[in-house]
Image (cartoon, rainbow, N blue to C red; front, side, top):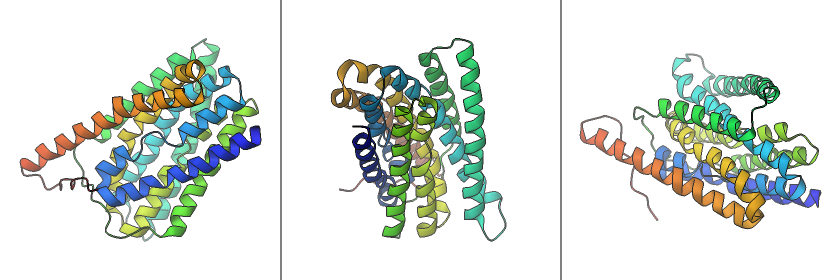
Amino acid sequence: MLASSVLVSALFAGLVATCVTLAIERWGGLVGGVLGTVPSTIVPAAAGMHLSGREDQLIESMSIVPLGMLLNALFLAVWVVLPSRLTNQKPLIITAISSLFIWAVAGVLLLLFIDWVNDLGASPWAISLAGLVLLIALAVRFNWEPREAPKGSKGVRWPILVGRGSAAALAIGCAVWLSAQGMPLLAGLAAVFPAIFLTSMVALWLAQGETVPRGAAGPMMLGGVSVAVYAIVIMWALPLFGAVSGSIIAWCVAVGGWSVPTFLILRQRDLKHSLHGSNVPMQEPLQS
């Protein structure tokens, strides 16, 4: 049962993870960044934890997802801020290594923080809501002003897409396995490891240059809040409604309550900014 849960969760996660890069290339950073980061890999991860572990471990794992997404927001912030400050010949390598270093250091500090608040008797709900508030604050800060977010003009090569899906599948498979081994905190971090963000940034940079991934990083940060919303809702929905119905309810709440309104707000903001003579190009309309 455990092996099948890990395998199914990992394969499904790898499949759905390839969509973000393609969405950004197709529709630009705003559409691809916000709507391309709707809850995806966390869906099979949470369902797999539900099927393979106890409910208390599921709640503990999901409670740190909002803080884990805060780590991912810091990861993406490096891709927004650092490249323009580099003058050497290897900005992609330095940016990728720096972003992973920031994520790892912040992850260690996060685990120490969680141990501390657990000793104080903080509930999983309090931890998750605190993480959500901090995540929203950081994401709004990096999206307050419009940035150029063009769509790609070249295709990402299929080996990179395969590598991206494989990395995401490995991360989610590890998350489900760790949860089953009684390590829910590590499982929660593994479930939000920035495999999708890292491979998206690298793939887009290699195929399109620096501008496309930098323009997509901010909207991806804001769109990623929906994953935190999903995690909070799933803590209630999975035990009450089961793996299928609970996942559907949480996904609809996260996408309908956050992703779609966020996209519409950013779209309207960029439209107004463009009409007032900004040099930031408007997103092209969605095409079928």
